[in-house]
Image (tube, rainbow, N blue to C red; front, side):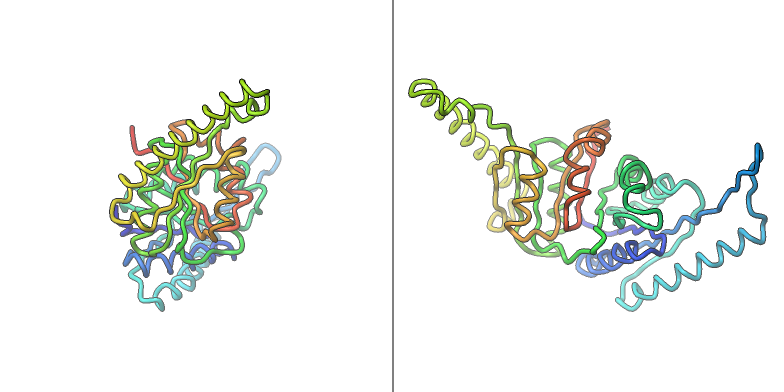
Length: 298
């Protein structure tokens, strides 16, 4: 695949600007077009059993202010010499992003970790989580401190379709930003606890433990060669045990990764991941941008 269209939703916050800066850098290297999208908030006030919305003049003022802010943010994109588009769309944020991405054949969405509503609310139950669940276009979440060019990429790989999709997107980014690729597989060391159970049991357990490790290593290297035939020299494979998120983050820290990539685990997997497992930990703890992908299968 090639990254030709990049979408950056913005609420004009500092963290949204981090996402814009990151997108500008990536768009330069990919020769991609950049779309800057804003969804204005039209406040509704509750009065007893009634609700009150601003009148036409107030709404017009909100939209005009939003357009001025959007034009101002777009100046940095223009200064970088990147072909770009700006749009204001009313509606529910995650649905607007989903529909815009489909309409414009967007290859990659880049968002900030949180905006004006605060990190806790946004990460656990609000915009970012809903965007990740709803928008099946690959998405990069840029942390509060921003991010640098993805020259060293770690890919969390479990041999699944979504993981292969993450590797495909990582390869497209790697073509634009050459550097090492690290394929990381986390597995359960089922025989480890039996290796100290005496000579007979321990020796048998150690053989099975080593056989499992070697088998997984062979599978990992075979998939690496199949997925990155032109980049074999740049690909390194890693096997880790224990908590998957800890293993991924440790490898990322050891190799100086500037991007971590992971796939979701099927149609409902993203909900499980966000609520209690790997993606939630990565979103919370990763000091570098995080790429999440869905499986393209219907």
